[in-house]
Length: 129
Ligand code: ZN
Image (cartoon, rainbow, N blue to C red):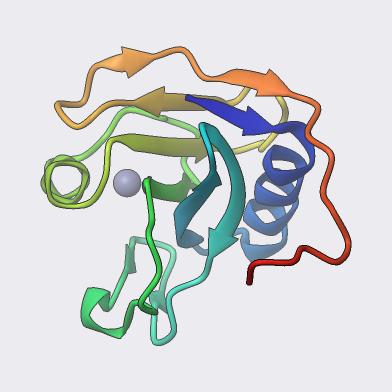
């Protein structure tokens, strides 16, 4: 699995602008490249946790999740591990100060995985929508 550089930058920005609250969303991919972040409607964000209302999730294919840890510690909590297991196979935790080096990617079981950053060309008028 890979992630588009622009998508990662967007994630870092939105995590930064949510600070000191947590940001949470779902990841969606084009082929094997993560290209989109889906913000789940009704996500309740506090400085403690962002609880996603998963039943509100739009009917699209998602490959995993992303959320921020304002504490800067990117280790998954017990609740995070439950979400990882339930939803997809790629899970990003971004810690403050939300720079290119302050995020960690995990698999379903909570093991650290390497996510390659690629330059992905976003097409403006994609045909088969
Ligand atoms: Zn967490």
